[in-house]
Image 1 (cartoon, rainbow, N blue to C red):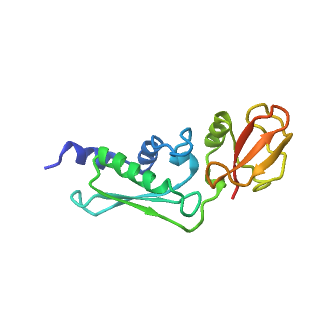
Image 2 (tube, rainbow, N blue to C red):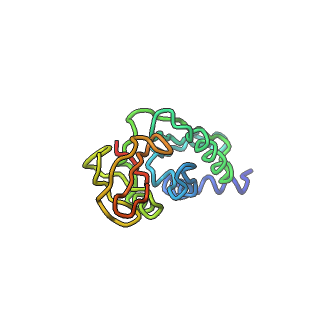
Image 3 (cartoon, helix red, strand yellow):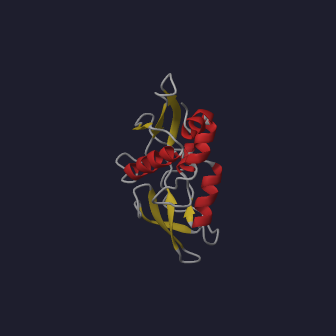
Length: 170
């Protein structure tokens, strides 16, 4: 006999799972979802019968050894359990390596509004010229190649004097 959860699980598509995964925010940058960041690489349904039905989510960290990945995997499992899945696999995919090209444009705009300069394809860590997310000036300078996390660099605007993070391109 099918339970209500079995009916819910059977009605979910890959697209609807991705919509649900939008609810999970990056623990280090809470304005970005894991989908915005582009770390969700695939959603696959597993099992051939309703009793064996499960799901596998593949994720790729922004940096190898990122401490947030275990927390993100746990949040994915909890979310999928609330949707009725009983067999859940979250795999960390190392290849291909994550790239800022996988970030959504909406996510890059959210970074800017949050006060973090989004990545620019023209450079990884420039010495200067990153647009200040506070005042819009390009009169900025690199203070440190590493900021609060390994995926960000620390800059300061020479006009408004505010320090800000830059999400590194890679």
